[in-house]
Amino acid sequence: MGERPLMILVGIGYEPHRGYLLRSIAATTDVWLLDHEPVSWEAPYVVGGTAVDIRDGAELMAAATRVADGRTVDGILCWDELKMANTAAVAQYLGLPGVAPDVIDRCRDKHRTRAALAAAGVPQPRSVAVSSLADATAAAADIGYPVVLKPRALGASMGVTKVDRAEDLPAAYEHTRAQHVDQARYYELGVLVEEYASGPEFSVDSAVVDGATTPLFLARKTSGFAPYFEETGHLVDGADPLFTDPELRAVLSAAHDALGFDSGMTHTELRLTPRGWSVIEVNCRLGGDLVPYLGLESTGIDAGRIAAAIACGRPPTLTPTHNTVTAIRFLYPPAPTTVGEIRINPTALPRGALLARPLADPGTTLAPPPEGHVWGRYAMVAVTAPTPAACTPLLDAAEAAISLVPA
Image 1: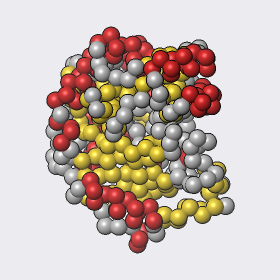
Image 2: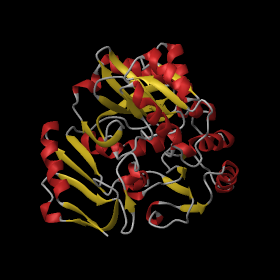
Image 3: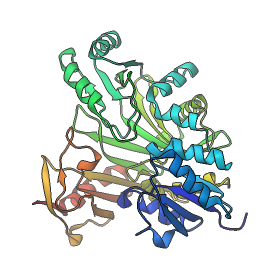
């Protein structure tokens, strides 16, 4: 157990969003990267890499099997939802730790998620899967406005739309139904019409070991561009009083039990409604939008290393070492814009700034929702402060230090 384990990592994703995880994992674990392109910036943090179409289950299986030929592979990890099911199939074939592909599908398929949670009595919004505007209209009338339309097979709030009035439903349904990304499954019953859960929105990243769910940190979410639910920022307070709420912990455990998720990392989104906690969705992966980075800075809990340890069947370290407050904000252009240059004035960044990074290259055309989505962001800033309230002026100052110059 003292030797460094060897773990296959399926896909790295966008370096500004996921690079910090690889750098952290590499401190304790040997990593072999399977990704679309040959190893480049990742080279200092991996022991090897294979360029392969990781969207293709057969090719991924063949590449992983070649890595395991003559080597002891201890685990496999993926944090891209669209690659999770194929990764789980590889883990199952190679006898590595992890949940079954069907469990991944139960989390990925939001209709199956709702059914499993409903059967277990887990609090959540009422939800109806529909295949037409007529069915959506009937479901919305039965549930009562406002309702939320949500694509069954997508993530990151893509296509999620609040509808306040019946006359707004046709355009909203068309928008939600039209959303698609490569490799996402197509469902005839492809749109969920859901009860609107009022109240602030949160996410909790959890580690699940031998069926026991341990929450690691809680993030308070900021959304914008109504009636859409674009995630524009997050805040993690290492001493957040809600994090220890017994009701929250009971709901989290019940949700994981209902879905059969007993090994790995999850990112659960919830709202705190007047009736209590309500589960919005359970994602079978590490949180995105640098939420694990905020968790590390706020608590000392390293979700990347925890994910690698669980993937390799080793006991993770779940104990916080400190508590402070960190927050991140994503910047969008006010209208469709082609990027000429993104300028960052380091001398104007406030004390407490953790990062300020561009997210778009010159020549890229960006747009805010609904035309754009997470790919409509041109930069991000993160700060740390003693209190949640102190983060807002620091984020404002950091944002002011960044300029988007149109082409």
